[in-house]
Image (cartoon, rainbow, N blue to C red; front, side):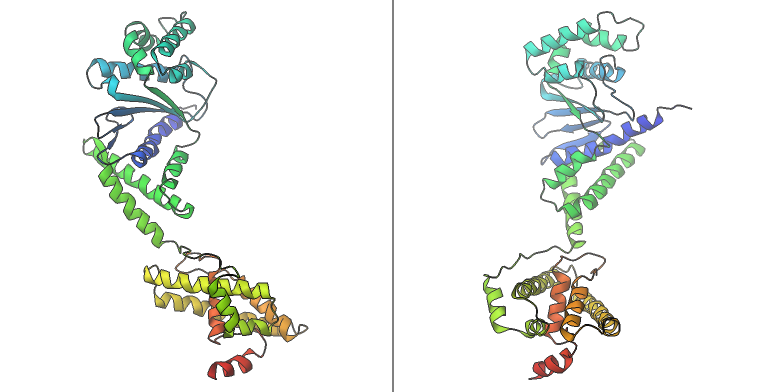
Amino acid sequence: MKSNAPGQLLGYALQFPRALYHLLRSAPSDVVCVEVVGDVAIRYSNGELLTEEDKSSVLGNVLTDRSKDLWKTLSNWIDASNSGFIDIEKTQFVLYTNQSGRRGLVNEFDEAQDPLKASTALKKAKDKLKELDVEHEIWKYYNYVVNENEIQFMEIIQRFNLQIESGAGYDAVRIEIQKKHVSEKQIDFIMENLNGWVLKIVVESIAARRSAIMTWEDFDKQFKVLLDRSRSRELIDFTMNYNKEHDKVKKQFKERPIYLKQLEAIELTENEMLEAISDFLRADANLERWIENETIDYDIALDFEDRLTKFWKNQRKRIGITEKNLNAVEQGQLLLSDCNSRLETIRDMTPPASTIPGTYHALADEAEIGWHSEWDKIFIKEKGD
C-alpha cells in the first residue's frame, strides 16, 4: 500500500535541524520558535521577523509550478499580512526544501528582488497558469495570491528566499557549528546534543500547550556547556612539531638523555632520533596540560603507562622466542617499531599520534624499559650512576 507518511514525517522532522540552524545564526536577544509563525521563525532583537516554511519529499521536487505546497505557502503569508499578524516590510520569507528540481516559477520568485523583477515574475506566473482549471486543487490559493492580492504578492516575493539542501537538513547545521571554531571531532557530539535539546523544548512546549520558543540566551548557555563537555571528551593536541632547529630539540640532542642513548644502542638514524625527541617533548607537554585541565589525572596517566609497559613486556618476550635469527640491534628495532605502532586509548579516547611513542621514550628515559636485548645491564647501571 502506498503512503506519503514518510514524506510527511520528514517534513515535521526537518523543523528541528532548521530551528537549530537559525539558533546557531542568531544573536543576543533573538528568539527562535517552531510552529508559531510558520514552521520555524526567528524574531530579531530589532523587531524584524524571518518566517520559514519547510517542504520535504522522499521522491522528488515538491515546488513545481502547480505545487499545492508552493501556492498554499504564499497564500498563508498573504493571509497573515492581511490579518495584521505579520508586517511584510519587516519580514523575510523563506521557503526551504530538501529536493531540487527543474527551474520553475519558484526560482523566478526567488530572484525577484526589486519591483521590476517582481512584476516580471507575476506576469510569468499568470502566463504559465492562465489555463488553470478552477477545479484544480491549487486554484483557490493561486487566485487568492495572484488575482485578489497582487500588490501583497509582489511585496512578498521581493523579500522571498528559496533555500535548497539535500538530505535531512544537518549539513547546514554542521557548517554553522564549524564556523564557531569547533573541532571536527567534536561536531557530531555537539550537534546531536543540541538537536536533542531543541526537540525536548519543542515537544514539552507543545504538550503543555505553550508556544515553542527558544531564546538566544538559553541556547548560548546550552552551547557553552556542550562545548566544555565535548572538549573534556577529547585529548586535544596542545603542541606543535618540533623541528631539528628548535632550541629544545638541540638541547636534548646535545645532552643525550638516556632515552636517546637507548636509541643509539639499536643504531637509529639521526632523523629517527630527531623524530623521537619531538614525540618525547610533545607527549610530555600534552600530559601536563591534560592533567592541568583535569581531562585526566595522575592515576589515569599511570594506568596508561602500565598498559604500554605490559605490551612492551609481551612483545619483548615474543621477539626473543620467534626472532632468534635477528641480532640484538635488529630485535631492538623491531621491538621499538611494534611499540610505536601500538594502539591504546586514554579514558576511551584516542590520544594524538605522538603520545604513545613519546610515552615509551619517557619510560625508556627512566630506564623502566629498553630496546636493546641487554638494555637492563647497560642503562639501569647508568641510571644508578
